[in-house]
Image: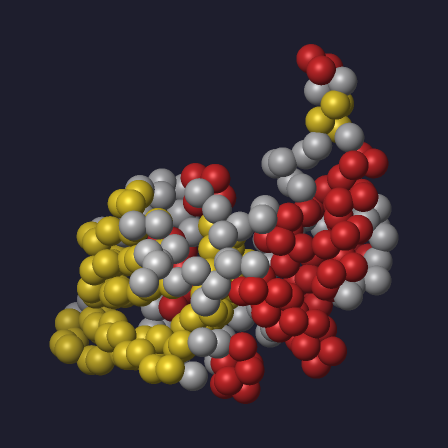
Length: 240
C-alpha cells in the first residue's frame, strides 16, 4: 500500500468560546478524491485552513508523503504542493485575468531588470482557461467578469500551481450546471494524474459523481458555558 499524500493526526483548534476542532484525523491517498462533508459550523473550512496555512493548529500533526511538516503560512503550503480554492473569492478586480492567475508568481525576463513577461503569462493562462471552458481573454479586466467567471479564474490559479494536493471548498457554489460539469471533469483528470483532492461540498450528487470516499464531520454538544457553546468534532468515514 502506498503512503498517503496527506495524513492529519489529532488536529485541534480553539477559538474564543469554541473548541472548533478536537482530535480530527484525515488521510488523502495518491489519486484519490475525498469528499469532506458536514453541517455549517462543523469545522470543515477550519480544518482546511489549518492545512492551507491560514490557521496554525493548537495540537496534532500534519504529514506529507509520510514525513511530518509544519505549515506556517499560505506561501509555505503552496511551496509544499498544496493549493486551496477558497469558497470566498480571493481575487483582485483591478487586475486582469492573467495577473490574478499568476499573482505573486509573475513570469520575469530581462535579467536584473526583472521585467514582467506579460506574453508568457497570457499564453499559459489561456491554456488553463480553455481547460475550464472559460471563454474570456487573459487580458480581460476581472471587474468585467461575473461572479461565476471569477470563481473559475480562482480555480485556474490553483491549476497553475501544479499542486499535488488540491483543496476545493464549495467550488461549484457560484457555477452553472455546465460549468460544474466541466469542473468535475477537471477533477477526474487531476485524479488520473495522481493528485490528491479534498472536495468540500453540501451537494451530495457531486459527491456520488466524483468522490472515492467521504469523511463526515458532525457537531456534538458537550457542554454550555457563559462564554458560549462548546462543540466536539467527530469523524465518520464511508465509501462512496
